[in-house]
Every structure is written in C-alpha cells, then in structure tokens.
Image (cartoon, rainbow, N blue to C red; front, side, top):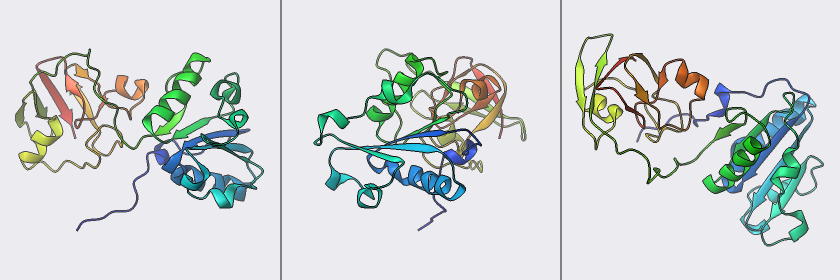
Length: 229
C-alpha cells in the first residue's frame, strides 16, 4: 500500500499576514481549518472560525472549541438564531480580511456564492474541496483531442471518454497525480500551444490564463494541446 503525507490545497495559498482572518468550515472541513486556527492562536492573530454542522454530536472537536472566544458554532438542530448568516458574517469586502472555506460542496458553494455576490472576486476566498462538482448537464459534451509533450515530442490521442491524464499514464508517462477530479492541483502542467477548456476547481482564473492546466479534468477546445509537464 502506497501512502503519502496528507495532501492540503491550502499551502499554495497560505495564511498571509492580515489584520484579520475569517474561517468557514462545514462538518469534517474543520480538519485543515482547525490547524489554521491553532496557528493563529499561537501567533496572536485575530480571526473568527465559523463551524457549521448538523448537530453537536456530529461535530468533530466541538467539545474542545465550545468555549473558545474566537469560535462560533452553528448547528442545524440548535438555536435557529445561531444558524450561519453568511451575508452578515462576511460583511463588506476587505482586502485585509482573507476568507478560507472548507467543507461539503453545498456549504462551500453557499459561502463562496455569497462572498461573490457581496463583491469579492471569485478567486479571492481560499478553498479546499473534498470532491469535484457534478458536471453541468447543460455544458458542452467532451470531445477528443491530441496532447503532445514538449519534452519528448510524443503525441497521444485523448478520446472523449478518457482524460488526458489517464492517457498519459497508460502510455508510461511519469505524470504525478492524486485526486483525478481537478481539485488538488497535483497533476497541473503548463500549456504551450492550443486552446484549453478548463474544467478544474483548483486553479484561479489568473493561473488558467497564465497557461496552467489540470489534465485530469480539463479538456481542449482545439484539436491539439502541447504540454510542458
């Protein structure tokens, strides 16, 4: 059995010096954010951790956080007046108050969509997902294309029902990978030529525009993509 150190999306966007941090977690999403909260406690940082769960009995680490002055617990079966009000909690956008989000998809989408509606750029909140979103049923059907490797000159056909990463691995290419869902960033490479169709949920719009590409999830609008792995 192969194991590795725990993978964590947040290190690529670490806790930066800021006047204050807002941490939002749902369910087991507390795992990475609890480490952040402890780090901020040790550094004397100002933050608020909003921890949402279905009930207190379902909330990991809740007993140790109940009396923490910087932690607000929100339980679906608790006091209705203490349910998370994302709009009120987020407040007006403040560049010196970064937002971090982790938890189930629905919870994350609620916080992220609220943040965007209140004026934060989509890439501003820092996030880590457990699973990829379901494909958009109204989105374009995946097509076939060819990937070429700048390092070797080799070219590989990617059929509509396979990912570029799968094809590379099948052909013995040493391509690092982990989630294979477009949410961890382990397999990201750079596109040197061609028009990629980004379907990942890990790269920011600026990173995508800079040529970064997640071959496990993303496709191509052009017939050919040249990659620099």
